[in-house]
Length: 340
Ligand SMILES: Nc1ncnc2c1ncn2[C@@H]1O[C@H](COP(=O)(O)OP(=O)(O)OP(=O)(O)O)[C@@H](O)[C@H]1O
Image (cartoon, rainbow, N blue to C red; front, side):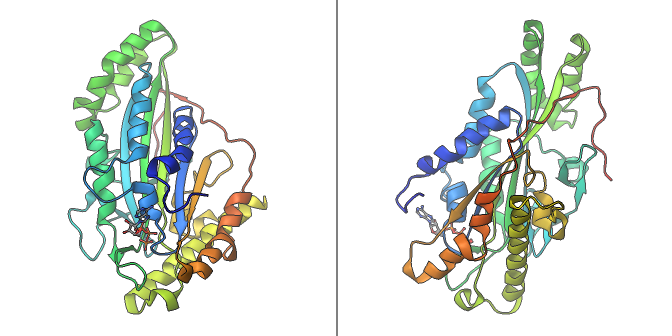
C-alpha cells in the first residue's frame, strides 16, 4: 500500500520487474482502477507537464538497448474505449468533444486480439526514443474528458496504450553482428516506408535455420472511473457515459471473478475493454492491477466499494491461474496475421 506522499519512482518499483518479464517473452499488462479523481491517470502517466518522464516507456527503451543481440521494432498504439466504441487517439489531431477515428477489433491468425489500424499507420513503428515519449505523452491527453462534481478534468473513457516489440533473436555471434548491423535501418527508413520486416528477412536468409521472431506486448490500461451518480452529479449524455463505464467495469470484475473461481468460459467478449484485453486476461499473462483510493474521508464509502463492494480488488487479487507462460517465438518464415 502506498500513501499519498509516495513518489512515482517508488510506485514504479512494482511495475519495473514486469517490463523485464516482457523482454523475457511474457504478455504484460498494468491496469489502474478506482473512483473518479483518485489518481489513476497520475499513477500511470505522472503529471501532464512536458518534461514529465513516462517511466514505463523509458525503462522499456533502456532494457531494449541493453541487449544488442536482438532486433527490436517498437510499435505503439493508443486507443480509448468510449461508450463501448474504440477510437484511435494517434489518428486524432486535437482535443475535441467527440472522439477521433473509430476502429474495429479483430482476432489475428495467432489468436491475438488487435485493433485494426489503417494501412498507412499500421504498426506505427517508432523510430526514436524521443518519438516514443512524444506519442505516449501526447496521445492520452486527447481522451474524452468531462467535469464531474468530484474531478474537473475527469477522463470518460478507458485508455489503452499498447507498446509492441517485435524481436528477432539471433543464435550465434555472426548472427548477432548481422542483426546489430540491421538495427538502425530497421528503426528508421524501412520502418517509415512500411517495409519494416525487410532487414529481418535478410538476416533470416543468412542464418542456418533462420532467426526466431517474437512479438511481445505491454499494455498500460487506465480505466475510466467507477462512479456513483449521486456523487458525480452526472446527467444527460454524461449519465449515458457513466452507465457504459459502470457496466464495462462490472463485466471486467466478472471476468476476473470467472478467472479466480476457475470457471470454464471467460466472458471476455461481452464488452469492448474485456475483449480488447483478452490476451492479458488469460492464465499465461502477467497482470498488475493498481487500485487507487481517494485519501479524502468524503470518498471513503466509494473507496471501500472499489476494494471490496464490487469485488474488483478482491477478485483481481484472487486470480491465480498458475505460472505465467512465455510466448513461443515463431520462425520468420511463418505467415503473418490475417483478419478473421
Ligand atoms: N500522487 C499524486 N501526487 C500529486 N497529485 C496527484 C497525485 N495523484 C493524483 N494527483 C492529482 O489529482 C488529480 C486527479 O488525479 P487523476 O487525474 O490521476 O485522477 P483519475 O483517477 O484519473 O480521475 P478520473 O478517473 O476522474 O479521470 C489530478 O490533478 C492529479 O494531478
